Image 1 (cartoon, rainbow, N blue to C red):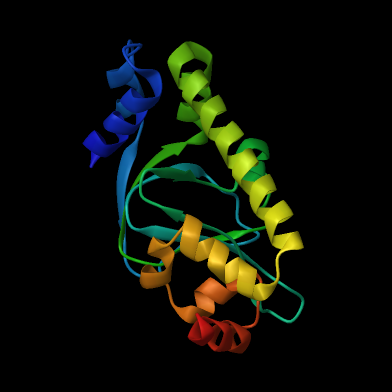
Image 2: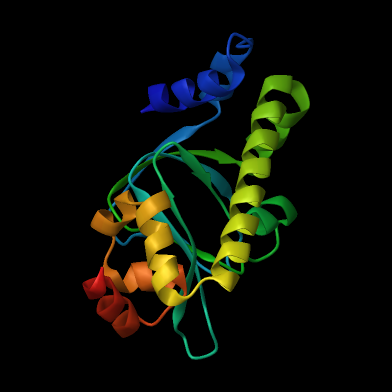
Length: 189
């Protein structure tokens, strides 16, 4: 499992691999079951996770306890509730394993130590943050301007593997549309 993270970092840094073993040693391996809760709202997020295998859902509840999915995180990507992780305050989001997962987790203390002592880790983290921010802004801006049908078409074009991996309910939540509307529109495609 650690090889997946090693390849991920190597792909981002090229030959700038000094301290790679020190970085990898700070991660612990975690295996989850399907539907296992990794982080619950109001608990402090203690880890940043690298998804070696599987799929995670990042979501919140509205006042009626309906789930709204902020993100679906698949292999070769990072996941955390960064505000809670960075501040030590309670999380406002939940993270659940949608599939059985193999994760590599780093705690806050180890993470901070690597940020201070390993310039390459700091560089990878900044790349991850920038990509995450750009993806979130793009998704929000795109979804605001798209109809429900156009959102489904967007998903089919840009993240097609989610259509076969996720339930209709979860896809509808991710797209911000009603499950019944999603099923009806999907049938038209």
